[in-house]
Image 1 (cartoon, rainbow, N blue to C red):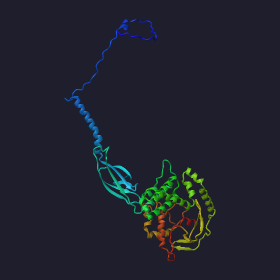
Image 2 (image 1 turned 90 degrees about the vertical axis):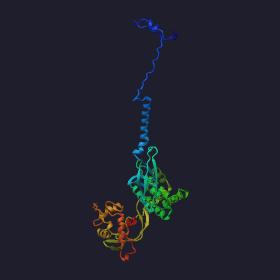
Image 3 (image 1 turned 90 degrees about the horizontal axis):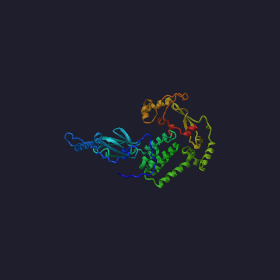
Image 4 (image 1 turned 45 degrees about the horizontal axis):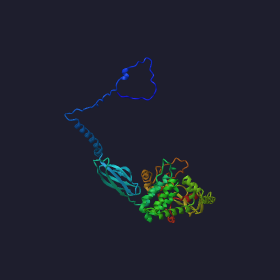
Length: 435
């Protein structure tokens, strides 16, 4: 028997009616023996011991899993990944006539022979035929890969940049960009695509003129960044940026700002608010505003003559001779211009004159509207009657700029001998305002 000593603690209170049980307190300590662990034994299956058929079962399960991971993907979907790059980048990729993205891009292509087309506006389309292979084992982790590189060429590099400049002007009419709606940098992307072509002065000169013409359409911070990026690419001429190219960009920018009046007012509206505030506090801005105010005080309310001078008839059109004054042209920023003498038609092009033009140039007929729309020469309202009651009767509605240019070229060939030194063209903004 084991003897134990207890510390002093709470007293044991005997409950009423309780009796002493000697057996309870005098019972000797006994130790109950532990029972052995319960065991489960598998019986043989078809005479096969459990250890054998369990091993086979586990092996089959592992084999099925490995089959679906390593073999099934390559067997059910044979093919590989095709990586397409181009120079310049940004070309649309079409595989068997289906659009698959723009370069650089990587996508899955089924096994077999395919035709790949690289398309970029202003560049010659490139077609290549490829045969995509496949890998059966572990294709999910190590797929078959193939690379395709294409170099695109531009027959008219300046014309290719013109397409980007036109897209830049279209985006300028879409309003202000926001956090969820950003404008693409189409002008600088077009300049990047010019690359080595810009080393040719015959290409760089017209591209520079197009950038200068695009300045007036930069009306927010995003388009200004696009414009500056494009100018930087053009001055680098396809080479890595250098201090000399950066200096040329800065020099041309300052030259443009000094040569073109009104650039301060333009920058005020195009720059972000915090940057525009710095401009508003500059002496250069205040000098520009003062000069504009002084010039604006000389704007002519009307020409000195309301009837013009000599009249010349050419078919159903009558042209009035106007002198070439030095005048102040109004607008956002008034400026002084000097015009040469010119003749301008009294009215819009008459229906009779247009019929004579279309008779000799049927490609501009109203029946060819859909074809002309596809070529981008007219819009859907070409030669359609207008419902505007103020539109002059007997004149041709909905004539596009391209159609008007073609009409002027045709009319030039109809000039009489005494007017062969003249050219029929559309009036400039200043000539139109003076007329």
